[in-house]
Every structure is written in structure tokens, then in C-alpha cells.
Length: 446
Image 1: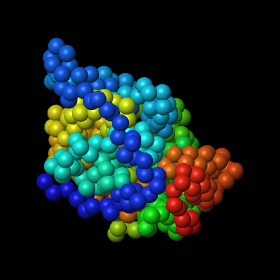
Image 2: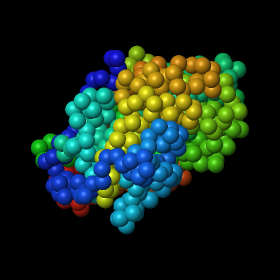
Image 3: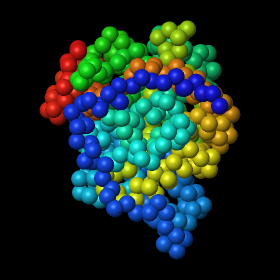
Image 4: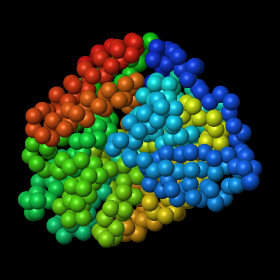
């Protein structure tokens, strides 16, 4: 089937071959003395798996019920932004990491450059890679090697309380100007109610806004990285959101916090700027509001030019010390490329992920119960959102430094002691400094 994400993103991550950060990656492929891909029914190969993504337990249960020579032992961990990544990093350092890990696209390069993961190129043949969106393959290819199995894509959309908007005759906003106007009306009608939330604890939320606006923070040229988190598109996004924060038109609760979930339940937050996986989040948090929510394209800067960034998106990677890579990859591919794997994850309506394997989008569409959204065709919306994702964004070599500095700065922004423009400068300085500290050739292009 043809898919609107088929236009390749010419991501610069493949240029990492020439960058010194990956000079020693050949020594990090790990996993010597691999166990057989499969055991026997009496003595199966057991793969350990850590993840926080919705539907993970269901997919593990389905795999274990249908396979007898490989078994998966699952442990749910906190989401990456709430401690999952430090837990993974510490486990790798201590030599006690599980075989298979759920890692989002933005964080993958950081784990690769730290030598925490195995090179999976020998398992991911050209025929297998053709099953995935070209963008997903690019985002999991570093230094010409494949480091993870893609699972989903995660374009932005806007979820909103349809009943509230209709009651007050507010049209779903198509542009950011309309979004601000709607936010002003909502605050005037219900002084304690907000149209949505600016998440200060999740740098990927603001990065998606910069991405959507046309920002391009990282690029490569020759053997060096060019870094510019302060490009005009990013500044435009920063100024817009600074105004929304200053005028108290949006909530600034932390993502998935009791404050945020409580506001959804109480109806004092009536919109959610989220990714395709956000439908499952909402239906799980406010199940009692079934039928009251709907989704539309994320507002854009120009009504005639829809645009979207990506928030998160997950992959499956094998830890460097695993001796069961073959079995772990087999399980990861079952999750990502089979009807049964997608149905198991999505069929329980716990996950609304957009598969990175285009042929499985119809399977996901059929499996996901959209009654919470009044039966809306969410996957049709997600595919269009995916088609509008800007092709030039790429992730840099120092994700932890970039996001750590940006996250700290965003907290100061919502606290009133700083600004988003300052936050961009802070992220710039921290990224360049970290890259130089790690011996990378880097150009400060700000």
C-alpha cells in the first residue's frame, strides 16, 4: 500500500560515520557468544524486555501465548521523561540491563554514542527494512549501521473536548492565530479553564513546535556538526508560546502529572496538543468522558500549509551485553511487522500508535476502538498528519545535554524567571559544550 510518509527524510544521522563520537562503535556491538535464536518448548530462550509504552504487557502476553521456543519476561518501567532513561543507563553501566529496550527516536543516538546498544545490522536485512517507513529507518541508522527496530511514528494532532467547543460555538483552530483566539475566548467564558497545556518538563513538546515551524537545530557538513537551536523558525515558535504563557492562556502543568490529569477530569483543560499515541493516553485517563473528545490536525502557521512535528516515537534496541540478540530481534520484529503484534498492542485500546510499517496501518485502524472519540477515523487523520511532517528535522549527537538544559530552562520559563528565547540560547550553549567535551567537531551556527 502507498503511504504518505513514503518521502524519505534526508536525515544527517547517517553522516555520523565521519564523526568521532562513533569512532569506537565497532567495539560496542557486544553480545559475544550469542544464544540460539530459539530454544525448545521444554527449554525456551527467555528474553527480558523493559518498556513503558501502552499495550506492552498485552503484546508480551500475546507473544508468549503463541510462541513456545522464545518467551519474554516483561518489566514495566517509568516513561523515559520520568526516570526510564536513567534506569536504563544505570542498568547498562552495572551490566544488568535487559535484552530488549524501548527507546524513543530522539534518545537513540545518545545511547549509541555511549556504547550502550548492539549493532543490529546483521539482523535487519534490506527486505526487512523495506517494511518500514524510510524516515523510521533513517532515524534508527547511525554511522551506516542499524541500531534499533522501529515501532511507530508520532505526528502531532490536537485533541479537544468537542462538547465544550460546540456548546460555546468555538471552531477547532486551524492556525496558531486561531488557537490563541480560541484560548482567549475559553479563558473569558470559563476563567479557570484552558485550551491546552505547555509541558515544561518535556523538551520534546517544544522541539516538536520548533520542528513544525520549520526549525532545523542540527546539520552536518564535512566531518562536523552544525548546531543552531536559535534559528528564525524556532524563535518564532518561542515568541508565540512565550505570549501564551505570559498571558496565562495555557496551563503549564507537567506532563502526566496529577495536576494535568486532574484538570482533564475536572474539565478545566479542554485540549491536548499530543501525538498519535495520545488518543490512548486520553481514553485511559478520562474514560468517563467517552464520546466528548475529537481530534483535528495540529494548528499550523498557514491554514493552506498543514504542518506537523513528531513527539517521541519508539524503537526497540538490544542492550550491549545481551547474549540473546537474535531472539530479542525476532520478538521486536513480531511486535512491529506482524498483524498479530499490532492487533495485540492496539486491540485492547490501550495504544493508538501509528505503525512505522505502512502495511499495518489498516490493521491498527481496524484494531483500535475509536468509540471514545465518537467513532472518528483517527488513523486517517494520523496518516495526513504524518504526510505534513517537515522532512528536514534531525536529532543531534548530544540529546541528553540538549534536552537536559532545555528542560531546566523551560522550568524557569513557566516560573517567570526566564524566557523561551533564553531557553533556546541555553540549549545551544549546552549542546555545543557537550559535543566539544566529547571530542566532536562542532560548529556553533547560532
